[in-house]
Amino acid sequence: MVLGRFQEQVKQCRRCGATWRSYEEKKTDVAIASAMVADVALGRVDVVLLISADSDLCAAVEVVREIDAGRGAKTRVVSVFPPGKSADGLRRCSDAWFPLGPAVIRGAQLPGVVRGRDGAVYHRPPYWN
Image 1 (tube, rainbow, N blue to C red):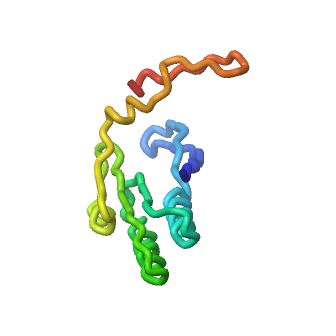
Image 2: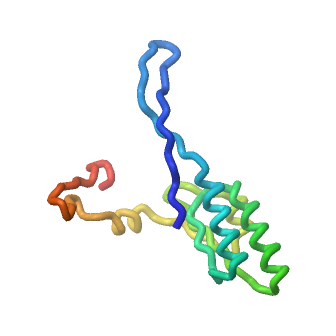
Image 3: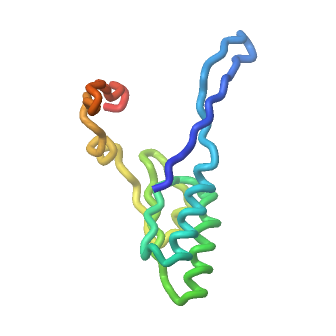
């Protein structure tokens, strides 16, 4: 699993000058591509389950194909598209693909309230329901 990194940014409205905090994903596609290529090159996987809708990752899938050709192997790449997302390029370069439905994500969430070992109480945001 490769987790993303989000960088905080302060945005400002050009018309009224209001400011707000925003977050931008950084280096996630590069980290996913690097991990995928390394895992295939080191023979760690037979199947890659790629959860993304970023066609930029097609380049990494092409490298996987080159590695496989050099070692006489066939790594299957299965792309899984998050709810409401898809990528034609990624669909074409993958061996298989399927959409991930919102119900699957809801079913994988933690309960509404989680208690930490230290007694802290964490609440799932209502908009996740």
